[in-house]
Length: 284
Ligand code: A2P
Image (cartoon, rainbow, N blue to C red; front, top):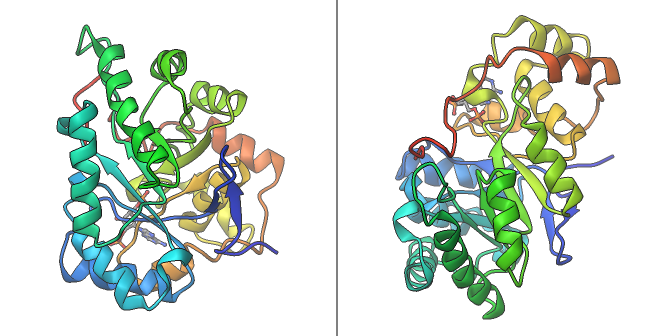
C-alpha cells in the first residue's frame, strides 16, 4: 500500500513524494511554523510554499523544529512575478534560500507565466526567466525546476527555447476543474502535474456529490478530493493548519474511487473554481 513517503519520478529521475503539504494562505509566524512541524511529524515529506505567501522563514523553521533531516524533506518554493528575468531570478533564489534557511531547494517554480494578453513580449520574458532557472539547476542550487499556472501556449513557447524542460507544472485542479488540456499536454511531454487547491480551497467540502461519493467509502469530502487527484496521476498539495485535518488529508491510501465515481467528479460543475487564471492578474 502506498503512503506519504511514496514517490513519483520527475523527468530527471528526482523522486517527489506523492502528496505535498500546501501552505498557500497560511500566515507566516507561529501558525506556519507549528503546522509545518506537525505535518512532518505526521509523516508528510513534501512541503510547498512560495515567496509571495510570506511564510518562507516560518516554513523553514518548522522543518528544522520537526527534526526530520533536510534530505528527507522535498521542499518547493516559487518565484514571484516581480522577480522575472535572468539576474532577478538568480537574486530571488538566493533570497529564498536564505529566508528558508536551506542551502538547496528540491523544486523551484515560476509562479505565474507572462502571457500574451498582458505583455507583448511574454515569450521572451518567460525565456529569460527560464534561463535563470536552468542556471540554478546546473549550479546545483535546485534539484528540479518547473512552472506553475502555465497553460499549453506558454509551455509550448518555453519548449522551443529551453535546454532543460520544466519537470513540473503546478496548476489549479480539483473535481469539476481539471484543465484537461493542461493534463494532456503535460502527460505527452513528461511533465508531472501538481494540484493547487485540491479541495477547491474548501469550496468543495460541502458539495453533495463529493460527500456522497466519499461516504460510499467511509471517507470525507476532503479525502475524496485528495484521492481523486492521486488517481489522476497528479500530486495534490492539500492545505490545512488544523492537526486533525492535516492527518485526515493523508489518510487516503486505503480506498479507491471507481471509474464511474472518477467520471462523475470529472464532469461536475466548476463549484470549486478560484476564478484565477494566468490571463488575468495573478493571485498571490
Ligand atoms: P484549515 O487550514 O483552517 O484547516 P485547499 O487545500 O484546496 O487550498 O483547501 C484549504 C482549505 O480547506 C482551508 O480553508 C482548510 O482549512 C480547509 N481544509 C483542509 N482540509 C480540510 C478537511 N480535512 N476538512 C475540512 N476542511 C479542510
